[in-house]
Image 1 (tube, helix red, strand yellow):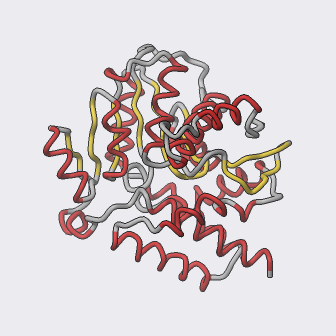
Image 2 (cartoon, rainbow, N blue to C red):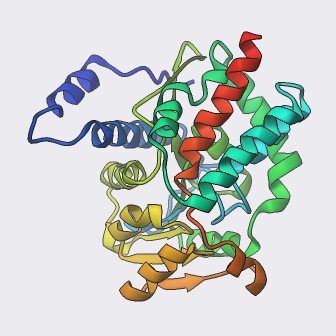
Length: 309
């Protein structure tokens, strides 16, 4: 099991970033999250058949929610937890309503961001990484397996058949993202890293929730570690919040795009793939990726209250 505590060198590097002329605190957290995600992903790299990719400098990167999976994977996980009495259906309804409000407005509330940063994944404080993995395996089979977009899965397989690495890049907790990648036969996953010590979660995040700039930094870091040529890489996402990641690679594809990403894709000449029905595509025209920040914080707050009761 990978120990995700930050070494002293990382902490010193973070302090060096705090120059008046340097990155903001949010950018520092995004960078730390991205590097931690890349390092953890490589340590847990899924190579099921022991084969080496034939194309060593090209790779594909897929967002998860509404790109690879229909809906938000963390909400599917929350439903699975509710069915196991970790919290009530009423709590789940309240949590889901918070996400509906966010998705309709498309605006990130600073309180939600702070809550996500400080409380996300706090419900697993003191629990083992093995327990989360076990729950994730069970809930994937129950709630997520039948929600994979066939068209997106086919795109991922196309890259695998070309001998390329294929990675998921998501704000979903790394352990859950790895399960999705494993079940789909992908190379691995970049996800939000929760700090652990001796296989037990501390309730803190390493850096921040992996979204926006964090995703881009994770992809960039992975590319350096693996010797990838980003100009030969491809990225797929549904959300305008992933434009930083999409802009890194030579080929960007908007999959089931929200209205803002569709506009960006048209302006930049990016390919658009929409696997939804026309009616559903018209209805789902709101930002989704940053909702994970609120999802993590909202779910952690709900579960934290239940654990404290």
